[in-house]
Length: 471
Ligand code: ADP
Image (cartoon, rainbow, N blue to C red; front, side, top):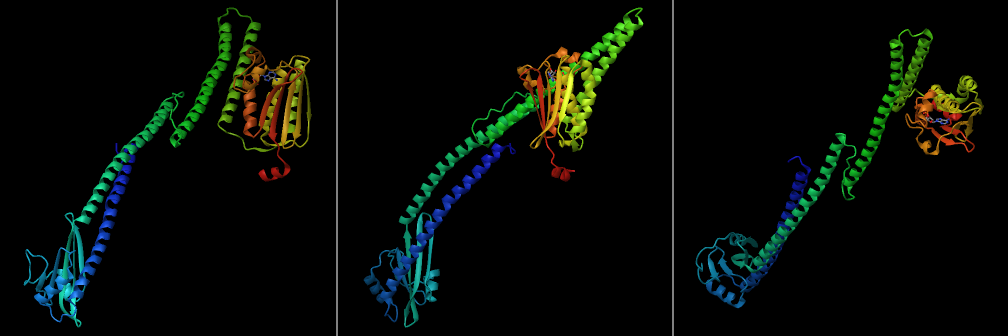
C-alpha cells in the first residue's frame, strides 16, 4: 500500500491541503491581532498623555490634587486608571471596589514609567484584549509620579473570534471538498495506470490482440494509444514470424518427403534395374539441391533480418552485370529466350559486389524462368539524376495485378506448381527487396502494357566526391 501511487498522491495532496489551511487559519488572525495591538497602544498612549497634561503644573502629587485633576479630565474609555507618586504609592484609583489607594502598585509598566520611560503592553487571552500603559509625570524634569491605564476589551476580541470561527468553517468545507476531489482524481489516475499495467501484462503473456482502453486525451491515454500501436506492430510481426516458420517448415518438408519416398522405392522394389535406380538417385540429388537452395536463401534472409551486413564499398555495377549476363546467357539460350542488355558507364553505388550480383541474378533468373521459348528478357542499367536504375523486362507470363503487392513477401508465389517446377524457392524476390532496402534503395514490380513483367531497382548513386570521402 505504501508503494502505491494512489496512496502517495493522496498523502501529498492531504499534506499540501493541511499546510495551506494552517496558513489560512494562522496568518490572518496573527496579522489582525497585531493590528489591534498597535491601535490599542496608540489609544492608550494618547489617553495617558491627556491625563498627564491635566497633572502638569503640579509640583507634587497628592490624593486631593490628583483627584481634582482627574475629575476635570473625565477619561472614561479605560477600565482602570491609577496615579502613583514617585515611589509607586497609589494616590488615585478609578476603581471604586477594590481600590488600592494608599498601597504600592509596582506593576512592570509603573516601575518603567517611574524610571522615566513610556511603557505599554497588550495581550489577547480568554476572549479579551488586555492593554496596559504607563507614563511618568514630570515637574521641572523631575519624576514626581506615574499615570497607569488598563483596558479590558471584549468587543474587538469578539470580532477576532468571529473571524477565527469563519476561517475554521471555510477551511473545513474547502478541506473536505479538496480531499474528495483529490481522492477522485488520484483514483481516476491510478485506475488508468492500472488498465495500462493489465494491458502490458496481457501482451507479455502473448495475448497480442489485447488493447489498453484508456479514455480521455491526457498523457496516460496517449501512452495507451502508443502502447496499442506498438502491440499492433508486435502482432503483425508475430503473425509474419509464425507464417514464416510454418511456410519454411512446409517448404523443407516437401523435398524431404520426396527424398524419403524415392529412397523407400529403391529399397522396397525387388529386382530394381540399374536405370530406374539411377533415375531415382538423380531425383534425390535434385531434391537435395532444392533443400540446400532453400536453406541458403533462408540463411541469407536471416542475416538481412539481423542486420548483419558486409562492410559496403564503392561498387561499379557494370562489370557485375556483365558477369551475370555471361552466366545467364547459357540458361536463356537453353530455354530459347533472347537475353539482351544495355548499360551506361559510371553506375557506382555503395554496397557489396555479392549483393549487386544477387539482385541482378535473382531478377534475371526469374525473368528467364517465367518466359516461354521464343520470348525475350531485356536488362538495362542507367543513370537517373542521383540514382542508378536497373530494369529487367520480359514478355513472359506476367503477374496478375492482385498479386503484385504481395510478390515480395516470403514464400509468396503466384503459381506454386510452376515455381517449384522451375526450381524456385519463393524467397528470391524477398532477398532482392531486403538487400536493396538495406542500402537505401527501392524495388518495384509492374506489368508491361504488351505482356510480361517489369522490375525496377533504384540505388542511391555514389558521386565521385562522395566516394572519395566515404571510403
Ligand atoms: P520463386 O522462387 O518462386 O521465383 P520469387 O520470390 O523469386 O520466388 O518470386 C515470387 C513469385 O513472383 C514467383 O513465384 C512468381 O509467381 C512471381 N514472379 C517473379 N518474377 C516474375 C516474372 N519475371 N514474371 C512473372 N512472375 C514472376
